[in-house]
Image (cartoon, rainbow, N blue to C red):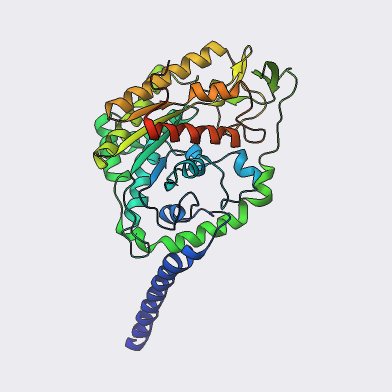
Length: 391
């Protein structure tokens, strides 16, 4: 029995040591030499290290983009290059090209304010304390993309988590939840990254990019105005987008908008406390319906995907709700010493001339949209320019 136990203990120890050595070799030696055409859902810090909007493996003196899929770079530009993430495909690359400074995205699709502003930075920065990874410093500048289309709804989902855990949802409860759940890093995660990477790669190989990724986004080009289309004016011509589009969340009540805004406010409070001396900018990213010159009632999508059908909304309701939410975000940003960059005026001016979304993914910018966003952020970083009053 002693021999069996001894052999078993030796086997377990050997497996643990082997796992540790392989993990160290993969992240320290192999990953820096790989030029990945796709980032198959790598763990948080590994994903940052292999991004191509920086000059070297470990970012230096860098700008961090926080947010959801707009910060991650989802959209037609990525689809046009067939998911080859070794090439430029979103605003991080534009900012890097224009400034020469390292730019990395902490963004993740579907992230609300709590995950984008608290959870992701915590995991990414604290992971660099693990021996498997090189040490990265804190960013030199933080830019947060707040997307009006669904960030408030994502914040409401987070508020439900807080209520389930704390029995209430107010500022104190949100602060406590952020501190104890999203703003902490467990040391055990340091030993889980290799297994996590293997699991993500298997999932990626099974269900993602290549053919299926493109089949999920068939083109929906603009055409004549008719039933089931969204009438917009481009270059003096009225055309129809054959889909219901996302707008500022018209379905939310006043109380829900206020609660979603409170989650943003407390997330910014955590970020300011964590990075007291850093310059922070919140970029208000409008939804598609808030950008184009609308020509009559529009088809509004309350869901995450853009599909035929949808609810009817007036252009006045869309614009009014967009301005209302922008002012809510502005108040939260200013309250915590952050700048606000309202992207709507410049994007609207561009959208009068050309499409900045679609024609496959109408929920995100195409190359024209991401290049405009990147230029706008670059100019703001240089001289503080850009709309800041939400009017």
